[in-house]
Image 1: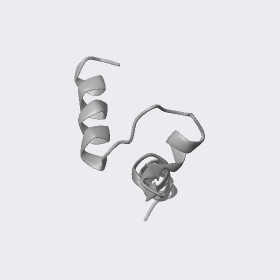
Image 2: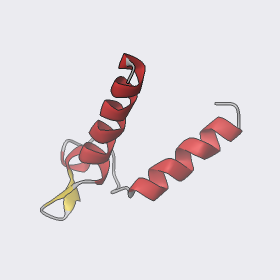
Image 3: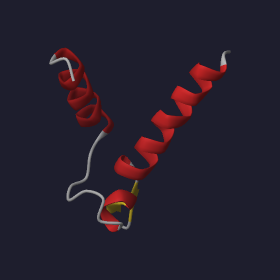
Image 4: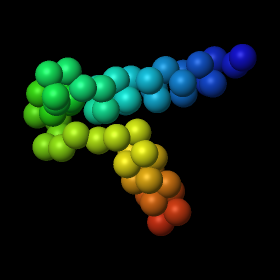
Length: 56
């Protein structure tokens, strides 16, 4: 497995952990006031695909 694949998987895990993983019914990102909502993995994927399809 190449380093790029490992880096990408690590980044995906970090995002899901911070934005989707719930702790006391809220995400870590919301607790730190990085965002004002709780995401699901599917909603993050949908937003990413939409951004890519619109050319960033």
